[in-house]
Length: 542
Image (tube, rainbow, N blue to C red; front, side, top):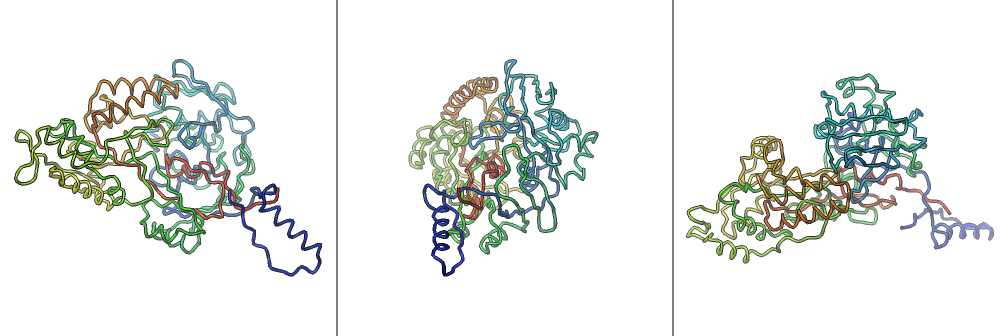
């Protein structure tokens, strides 16, 4: 921990006693055995590129600033630790019984809403019943999760969720912020979506809404926060037009922090100074190349393995830009509680070419390989944003070097998703996959998910993978789940139904005057505020 440097005025001590007191005070602030401790006070200004318009944890999709602010104003039953492990939040503890079909949460005593009203289990029931409403206007995946779930208040401080079948990832989704029933009761789905409450929210989180204006949103420390009032008194979200404008504001030191999604190296070099800490933060989302495993080309495991081995990850990372991406083996983030160390075959284009030759894929006079009349020629589809296109072009170049004639097809995002991914009409497709707050690979690789709306886009089937993923969903034993995911990873690496690349890293630029930040996985960009109550700017003598 770097002690806060207090700027002392320069003066000449006329009285020796006064000088002694000043010197003693200085050493108490900065020396061992008298190290400065966090104090309340200070203002922190975060730069964002979207104006907040609906600060309600149920309706944050499409506006990251809404999600950022909601994560500070509201609290969930649980929160995710730095590695994704569910930890107590509004619930102090819970029990899972009934073979994983019953979750009983015991709420913290003495929690109050920011308007002074008591928080109870009725608020929890109200929130999750609103999500389960057929006309819910929030995240469809969250609504689907709650279908068939019965939520009951046993008493003011106890609430039970009964599931139709065991679902181990369920706990990780209960991070959604709880709404105050006393302010919203009786509203239908449309009224809740458009409620005036969403512009002046009231929650139980570490910060309370203070005001909103054309420049942004101001929050103040919640003095009644159940885990203790945050040290930083005021947080301001200031809106800018785009990321270059954020970088300009950082260089001018008019803001204290900003999360940069795809900063150029030149921008980071300009910001790299004693004024800012640059913190690469990788998330749960990752880049992957899907292959249609039912096609004549990609049904051959030798082709899939050779294409993986021909990719130079450092070169791809350089093209993709951003922070320091984390390599991905089978889709489970390296910092996740569920991760087990594993390796994909190392970059070896010569070895990849030789393996194709042995498997019957011989180079023809035009440089393209073929096997039994089938040319190793295909299209790599990609969204048409600059980053994706540059990454796809580099992948295609590396594959052409081993005799795979690869053409890049760039499509606008909506066409790409609707017509290529969801319809399974691609041959190979560069995509970003986000498993969400729980690392469960079931939606992407279980054979039951091949048909739409499932997300097994590669059309891949392996009975061994089906078995381990089914069992992992049915056990709430964390270590057992991790062991099963290790088995999944070994099967995946051996057969490579797709080619995982890396998890992109955003860079959180934050003033060095802010202390107490703790790095964590970015399950969403708002995860950077997971430990905001521990941040501080001011210090005091112990």
